[in-house]
Structure formats: structure tokens, C-alpha cells
Length: 381
Image (cartoon, rainbow, N blue to C red; front, side, top):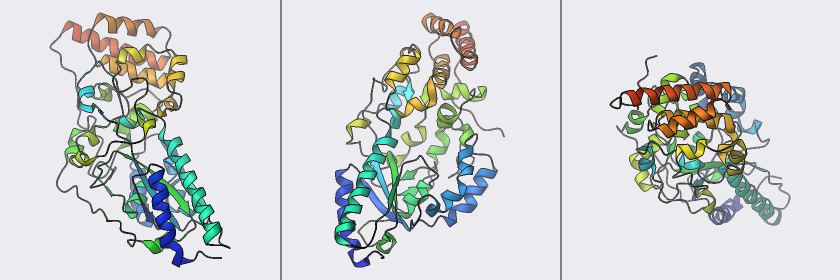
């Protein structure tokens, strides 16, 4: 049996109520046609901008055809959830070189788990409603949160959540970009509701602004709306499993997990909403902790303090690698040099390489206090 279309508006009203109760700040409907994304995706992959993220290419077919991920999918409900904590102190932390900067999305609980659980609950609500109000129709839903081959930004655009900014993130006129996205794939034909449930659309409103492109410390945008992940600090400190190329180490500064520069400077983020979700509040003072304190963590402490955090997935070795780079960009104090030296002999070969680099940079600045750190580079290839 097919879903009775006359009941879609009623179900949509319930979904709006359920979504609000579960902490989502907005939602909309996508018809799931990703065919327009094929050419830009293939060009992006052909340029090698994905770096070592082979899984992006491996899942290309499923990205372009959502029904391959969830059989019977004919529409997708897209959701957003705000995550910016109160007193984010972004600029202050970035300008305090001995403090560690952790991307604001990673200060609290892992959003993948939290949002997927909420979406799964919303899916159950839909199933139960359909059993009662659409007898004979079997609802099918599957939640996704940035952990499967899903083109979540084009889906969010189709759903009216926002538009893709020049920094490749979704922007919303009332909320900026400090929010997570999640999707619920379903066999319910919500496309029949397109632009009929009161949602305003968001046309591209970046205009002539290029602030996000200019501020990038590693010049990771070859052109507007295109990101070269190989140069992106988020990729280098999170997805990258190898040594950080030396040309990027100084520009990374004190950013030890991700980077928010392109969001922090975006004019639309003056409209950003602070999160109402307690689980996204900073844990273990990660919003105001020094590089030295974090570098002093043992692996056991790292595993304990990152339980339930997105930071844990990079592993202790890459965490130490990132912190060594941060310390090398910090104050050239005897304490910092001593801490790096003490850790050297008990670290992996990859971490040792970064410790040696850091010690060399600190020694250079000790010998020449006027030597400035290189905070931004321009691409040469």
C-alpha cells in the first residue's frame, strides 16, 4: 500500500513537534535527487582534493543515489542542531599561543552518537504514527549523521536548511553555520510537501565577501566553493594519519583538533544561535586548557578524558603529534623544551619527528626572540 498523501500535512506537523522536542532547531524535506552533484564530485575527486580519504571515492555511487544506502528511499528529512557553546572564546584562544584550540564542535559529546539516537527516536515516532493513521502502509526510515556516504550539504540545500557558502559549509540567514546536520532517509513521499509547509528558502547570500577564503591559514580553497582537503587544518589534524607536511606546521599554530577560522570570520555567524544541548558543553576544560597540560596526558588519561568525544577517534599518537606542533608554535620557554625532550624517548617515530621539529623551532626563537612565527601561507602549486 502507498502512503495516503492527504495525510502528509498532518504527519509533517507531528514531525515538527517531535523534532523541536528532540532538540533540532530546523528541518526540511529533500527529494533526494543528487544527479546535479555528479560532475562537481567527480572533478573534485579527479583533482585529488580528498587526500587519503579513499572512502569518499569508494562510496561515490551511494552518495549520488540515496536509495542504494536505504532501499525504497524516495525522500529525505534533513535536520539541523546548533552546537556553538556559550562563551566560545574563539579569537581569545587563537591569540593565546600556549592554549590549545579544539574545534568548537568537538568540545563536548560526540555529535554522531547523540544526533543519530535522536533521529532514531524520531523514526520510531513516525513508524508508530503510520501504524495508527496509515494502516497497511509500512514506514521505513534510516538515520545518518556524517558517518556514511551521504551528500548532506546538497541535501540540506534542497531541504531549505541553507545554502553552501564559499567555505563549503551550509549557511543559514538566521543561524550562520554553527550547526550539525543529520538526515532521516524514508519511503514516505515527503517531496509532495516541497515548499508547502511554511519554510523559507535560502538563496546564496555570500555576495562579494571572500573573508573565509582569505583567513584560511593554509590557503585550502583553490577557488570559492571548493576545498582542497589536503591543505585544510581539519584534515591535517583529524583525517590525516601520517606526519603533517612541514610547510603547514607553523600556520597550524595552536589548533590541535580541527579549525574554525572560516566560520569565525563569516559575517553571517553574527546570527548564530548558542546551543541548548548540555552535552555539547565543553568537557575537561578543553575550551581553555594549555598545550602543556594536554601534552602531559598519558594514553590512559587520553582514553579516559575522550570517552564519548569525537577527539578519541584520531588516537593518542595523532593527538600527541598535533600537540607537539602546537608546542613548537608556542612560547620558547625552558619548561616547554623540557617537556618535549622528556616525551621524545617514549614517543613513536612519527611523534618524535614532530617533537624534533618543535624543539628546533623553539631553539630558533630562543636564540632570536624577534623571529616571528609564520601564521599563514599561500599555495604555490
